[in-house]
Length: 587
Ligand SMILES: Cc1cc2nc3c(=O)[nH]c(=O)nc-3n(C[C@H](O)[C@H](O)[C@H](O)COP(=O)(O)OP(=O)(O)OC[C@H]3O[C@@H](n4cnc5c(N)ncnc54)[C@H](O)[C@@H]3O)c2cc1C
Ligand SMILES: *[C@@H]1O[C@H](CO)[C@@H](O)[C@H](O)[C@H]1NC(C)=O
Ligand SMILES: *[C@@H]1O[C@H](CO)[C@@H](O)[C@H](O)[C@H]1NC(C)=O
Ligand SMILES: *[C@@H]1O[C@H](CO)[C@@H](O)[C@H](O)[C@H]1NC(C)=O
Ligand SMILES: *[C@@H]1O[C@H](CO)[C@@H](O)[C@H](O)[C@H]1NC(C)=O
Ligand SMILES: CC(=O)N[C@H]1CO[C@H](CO)[C@@H](O)[C@@H]1O
Image 1: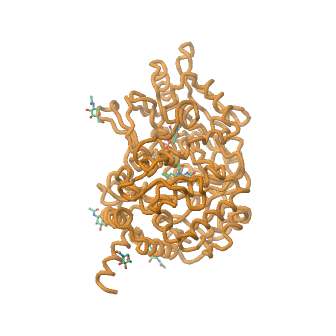
Image 2: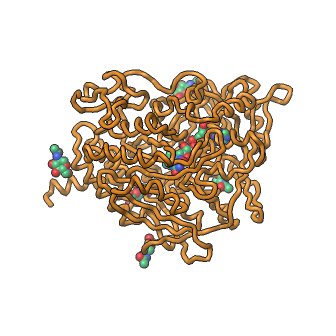
Image 3: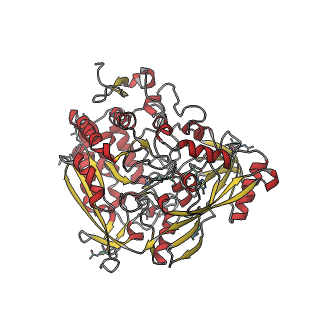
């Protein structure tokens, strides 16, 4: 290798986050989403990456941190009596869209950060009641300690139970009740506004058979504040996990069957590499030997210096002079490195010695050690920590009816076959497309049908209106999914345009809105964003210069792209009705 090549490899290596090879003791817990200049007044609120899709930071008049349900009722009553808009923020506020912003500029934020206790556990009946601000990590740990398992959950444990329910969050399964956490909710206490005669706020207790539970389980936070949640758990079980990498020639067929073959099966597609990483993941008896642990490589603390250098290298390849050869090489190196390190799975909690990794559900189901670390003054941090110029991404996540998923996959493959290397910039360099299963739900804003969820993280510029390399690839996939295959955007991810018309795809949306009108007739928990998304008022699209690049609109004019960078509004390559910002010549 020449010196130049070595240098190129060096910068690539760092942006590949190969730093994750290092064993680190340090870390910096993520920042608070709510920051006030004057004690608990004059506040801003943002999400865990410090940026909403429109790049605006929200404002609020004040924040409160109730520690008990009684204090929570007081907080809702105080805002309701003043007819003030309000919204819940959580410990880290991980949702990408502007869900945690109160309406207007003068609203109240109620943080559930201090509502994080276990209320009661009935191990015999398998019931666990927790306060809504409890972080998933603490919840599954407490369940495990009581000999119980939450059968499915998101993969990142920094979320709170109240927040993840509100957006319909899930892991992967079509077995039993499926992968959405709200399927395990059998009771919920929610504080809603009330007339003066009732003291401006009431606690509503919803049992398993209460019809409103189907609204409150997945509520986007617009019904009131969930105070406590009761979950139906199962006796502690173990899982056995094996990853198998195969070529993607039968990927379209496999997507239809993989979730039926393995209870917790998922897939990751690396389009340019023509590979699919199959997760064979099944329940095994609790007596099976093994004390495995998942310590995901992507949720560990990374030295800040490496994150900044890596980002700088990535910026050079993504903006300005795009180099597909280098991007694709980076994607391959990264995939190989993750595979070698078994994605952070460890057989005995310390070392990976080979598949299968067998371990308790609560040690395998979710991960994310970067939130655990003691403060080290930002010497190391979560890769996306907004206080440093490290990783910065957009997250596209939609689900498609299981019956339509094979045709959709085949269409993505046709797009890939036209120019495979253009997929590296948007997909292969960010760990591929993660594919998970979600079962049909009775929740009004849950999945109406058994579905396959496609999750794509891709590079995002820090400059407003600056496209990433081959921005049209992910944009066309998104439009094919949403507009041709009836795809549903994940409520807690995605960019604005994905929500345009989404509510019309929920057959029970009207029932949801009727409950909302009863619980919060003045819309105090509603905001501009929630009204746009729920089809009540306005559109989530923002039409302006560069809106196509930012995902705030589907472009209809070259000015919505970045003509000065050579990006013009063009039809899709396999889906002629798509309109994407592309550098291709005018056809
Ligand atoms: C790194 C990362 C990994 C992720 N992994 C997954 C995954 O594997 N699977 C998946 O499905 N999703 C995943 N997500 C998305 C995530 O599940 C959702 O964004 C989730 O809503 C975030 O939970 P939170 O506790 O941070 O809530 P927030 O984002 O703070 O809140 C979400 C919404 O719920 C409302 N809310 C919160 N608590 C309450 C309450 N007690 N009462 C009423 N309303 C409330 C808020 O006001 C807001 O409207 C991930 C996100 C990130 C950033
Ligand atoms: C409110 O906060 C903003 C910054 O978020 C600041 O510029 C402004 O001075 C603050 N106002 C008061 C009255 O503190
Ligand atoms: C609740 O949050 C506090 C502060 O973050 C933390 O110290 C405590 O361990 C949490 N409690 C539980 C039960 O997880
Ligand atoms: C900062 O992190 C580096 C690893 O990148 C480590 O070697 C060093 O000791 C840390 N310094 C401090 C002050 O924590
Ligand atoms: C692109 O990257 C490859 C691999 O790193 C390198 O060999 C090549 O010189 C680069 N091309 C340009 C134009 O920089
Ligand atoms: C046998 C073996 O490889 N043991 C290693 C397991 O992991 C710990 C900590 O990461 C190492 O210190 C051991 O050497």
